[in-house]
Length: 99
Image (cartoon, rainbow, N blue to C red):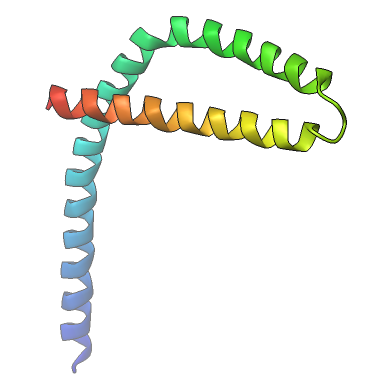
């Protein structure tokens, strides 16, 4: 393969990647705007309930006997993960409805 063919191939590849990046960036930006607007409308109520639940859960864990605290910590973490997955699923449903 000659050097000029290699250079032409590299330039075509760079242009193709640049075009893909521009197209993908525009669609990603639109999705980000939708996500930000939906999160902003949900944020105030979620922040208050998360702060209250974290205070209550840490108080509940501290009040348990020392032998049960690791299980209580794991249960609390599992509940928080489940809540996060549910809220993520709700956001995905809202985004799919918006499209």
